[in-house]
Amino acid sequence: MGGTTKRYFGTDGIRGRVGEAPITPDFVLKLGWAAGRVLANGNHGSVLIGKDTRISGYMFESALQAGLSAAGIDILLLGPMPTPAIAYLTRTLRAQAGIVISASHNPYYDNGIKFFSAEGTKLPDEIEVAIEDMLERPMETRDSGSLGKAERVSDAAGRYIEFCKSTIPSTLTLRGLKIVVDCAHGATYHVAPCVFSELGAEVVAVGTEPDGLNINLACGATHLETLQRRVLEEKADLGIALDGDGDRVMMVDHKGEVLDGDELLFIIARSRQQAGRLQGAVVGTVMSNLGLEHALRTLGVELRRAAVGDRHVLDMLCRNDWLLGGESSGHIICRDRTTTGDGIISALQVLAAMVKAGQPLHEFKAGMHKYPQHMVNVPVVAGFDCRHSAEVQAAVKAVEAELGDQGRVLLRPSGTEPVIRVMVEGTDAGQVRRLADQLARAVAQVQQNAAGNQACG
Image (cartoon, rainbow, N blue to C red; front, side, top):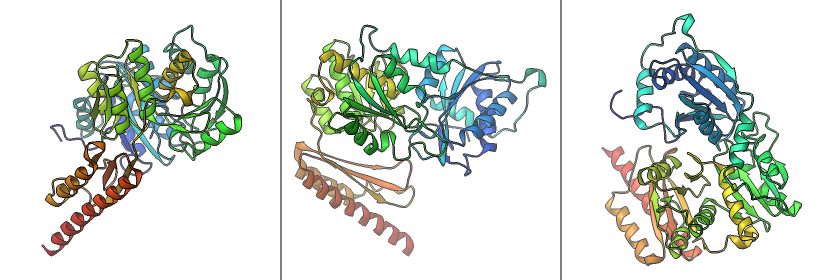
């Protein structure tokens, strides 16, 4: 393989459908061995394994455990725990690495493997390439006397709960707030309700009955209808929705109105800026709403855009020593609190700011006006990228000319499916939809022409 080309690792580990390569028991066993060889660097180290609640986690946990043991690595088993909890516990337990078995917000029939370094950060590209290189070698089992041992960390949940609570002032209480918490039948089911109730809130917990098959099913951060309905039924002050592995958060105010990652990021940024604790720019992505950029500008704060993916947001934050960034999807990174996106901790930062201001969430979110945004997915042949086509560039310029400085256009190939994502954003919803459809037709026509020329050739 060599070089920096990666066959298996994507922007967030290795992910796919269970039973289809590479998400198979035999591959994951060898992945555990290869990772153990690379991450421990020949030493007899230890690696944490945590997982979400999907049924295939049992199978892959055993496979990873066997592979790591064969490489001479001790294993600390955490059981179902949020992804950011594994990042935290990897640091505090002084492990060589942490491994998460999860496909995040995907359905139960998908799964994946992602890694954290000893510092609780995602692995650099060169380490992922080294693991893939090791996968090409024959698997060798250490001498029986040097095999790794496994033990379960019985107090993992308690350790993480206390850490989450420590990220807001010890004098702050959530007493008097009624909060609906949707755990998506995922890894936060036994953690998140405890965090908010121990801080004084009255908690109505939903999505806390995982059966291995219902993770993210019509609930959680990607399906907010359940939370919206329950907030209104319970006459709650607000609702918090987490995804299956706990690294995303969305919120709902007492009127049932949704606050996405851009709005939550603005609230946290404004609070930090008012307290004099916002260092440098805020990092969003190319998909972050133009309203976020304009709202931050009124505070004298710059928004810098990274590529889509919390990995790219974190990379820009670290390179510039900035502290706050996130995505519209609810991945929010508070580097002054933790090393990765954390849904519970991000929600706590919003609640702390809200309580300090003494305002309900519906009023406290004022200050940012979201621009209408419309996206069209145009199917293309895998690997086809028409962004440099003269016809597409002309179509983009025509749309940009009509929008002026009150909107923007984005074309990007999907990283997970063979489509070009066409996004248009502006002040008028009807105009935005019309221009997005117009540009999508131009992209589709170029794809059709290219396919026709290829067939003729």
